[in-house]
Structures are given as C-alpha cells and as structure tokens.
Length: 274
Ligand SMILES: Cc1cc2nc3c(=O)[nH]c(=O)nc-3n(C[C@H](O)[C@H](O)[C@H](O)COP(=O)(O)OP(=O)(O)OC[C@H]3O[C@@H](n4cnc5c(N)ncnc54)[C@H](O)[C@@H]3O)c2cc1C
Ligand code: FES
Image (cartoon, rainbow, N blue to C red; front, top):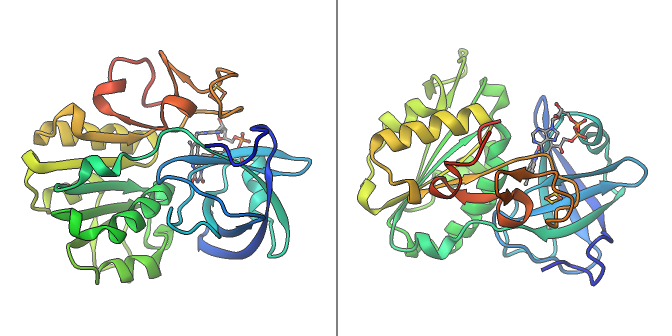
C-alpha cells in the first residue's frame, strides 16, 4: 500500500549511515519520518530534491518498520547524487510498489537463491525474511557471484548467514586473487556444487540481465519447472504505478505486475533479458 494518501508525494527519510560495500556500491540506512512497511521484493522510489528519483528494492528486513536500507550501485545521474549523500541529509521515499516474493509459497521447500552483483540487495531482504521463519523451510542455499573479491558486498552479513542453521552459502568470483579461497568462475558454476531436491525446491534469481538469463537456462536444464523459478526483473521505470508505461515488458507493467515474476509468466514476453 502507498505510504501516503497522495501516491505521488514522497515522505521524508533521513540518512542515518552510509556503508561502503564495494568500489561501485554503497548502502544507505534511512530513517523515515514515520513507520514504513514493505514486503520483501517490493520496491521504493527514492528521490533527491532537484535531481530526480530512481527505483530500488530495499535490502533490509521487511520486519523493521523504523528503518529502510537501500544498496545502490553507481550507474548514472541519480545514483551518482545518491552516492554523494552524507549522514543527516534528507531524501524522499515513495512506495512501496509492486509485487514481491510470495514467501508463503516457499514453505516446506528448499529455497535455492542465485544472486549476482547488486542483485544481492533484494535477496538480502528476502534472506532476513527467511531467517525470521527458518523452521518453515527445508533449507536455504545462497549462491552469490561477483566480478572480483573486492566486489563482494555484505561481507559481515555473509559471515553471520554461514552460522544460521539450515542455511548454506556458496560464493564465486569471475577473477580470483590470492585473498580468495572460494570458487572461481561465473556464478552458475556454484549450482554444480550443491545438493538439492529439485522436486521440492524453488529457485530465485536476481542479478544483471546476462546472469539472469544464463542462471535461468541452467536451472531449466537441471529440471526446475518454469513455475518454480522466480525472477526479479528490472526495467526503466518512472511512475511506479502502472500509469506511464515506461516499464512495459510485453503485456506486463513490471512496476505493478512485478518486479517478481515466475519464468513461466514472462517467458513469452519480448526482450525479457534486456
Ligand atoms: C524494481 C527495481 C529495483 C531496483 N533495485 C535496485 C537496487 O536495489 N540497487 C541498485 O543499485 N539498483 C536498483 N535498480 C536499478 C536502478 O533503479 C538504476 O540503476 C537507476 O534507476 C539508474 O538511475 P541513474 O539516474 O543513476 O542512471 P541513468 O543516468 O538514468 O542511466 C544510467 C544507465 O543505466 C541504465 N538504466 C537506467 N535505469 C535502469 C534500470 N532500471 N535498469 C537497468 N538499467 C538502467 C540507463 O539506460 C543508462 O545506460 C532497480 C531497478 C528497478 C526497476
Ligand atoms: S513505471 Fe510507469 S507504468 Fe510502470
């Protein structure tokens, strides 16, 4: 549900903390002017006065109504302004928007998560949600890939996740260095290392388009049904409300019908991997 009666009007949120995650990625802990609720996988529009707004999926726990954390990769005009934010400054937040992860459909199953680069942001929020209900899942396996060891984000969170019962974490980098003692190779190689019961499993994929494509193809090849592969789609967005049409992917408004879709829902739409 929109957080204000005027869905176009942002609420104010103060930047409490800025965390350097990697050379191109920073996280921002925001304190909204009043409690803010979202479901994991839904997104917000974050605005900077005088510069514009951009969509981001919160990377924080959906159970925390007092704070919202967003993890932002520097990509262009607005994200560059966001990267320059300092604690104490104020931003605007609209939302939450869209359709997030249907966590209740994952109950009783193994959840395999394939993430790449900044695609870890929505996944971290999902993981917080899964941890809070961990007895409801058979097991949760995170496979995360980035370009180099220094591009791996959320290092403290990953260390904590490794200690959580029923959770397994595997990481790969495209190019390793002497500091790296995990897998080298594109993230899909991790799927060769894990044990899962595909007939009682769902897969979640989030990352750059090329990774989403090859991740999905590999999961299909492994035998995952199209209905059990969940993709978090990113398209250029403006209104976030199913009005402007900027985000259209075939018959779908990604902002309203997504951003989370099963592969089965979108496989016949044009340009899904662009
Ligand atoms: C639902 C949703 C959730 C998102 N969540 C996150 C997140 O958690 N963290 C994060 O870092 N980014 C996220 N993004 C992407 C983020 O919104 C874009 O990087 C941002 O809008 C770029 O704005 P800009 O003004 O800095 O770049 P611009 O100056 O507008 O563009 C820079 C370049 O990025 C391309 N671009 C612009 N918007 C997008 C987009 N939406 N997807 C792909 N390429 C784009 C442009 O074509 C151009 O090549 C999300 C996008 C969507 C749709
Ligand atoms: S962003 Fe305007 S219709 Fe989806």
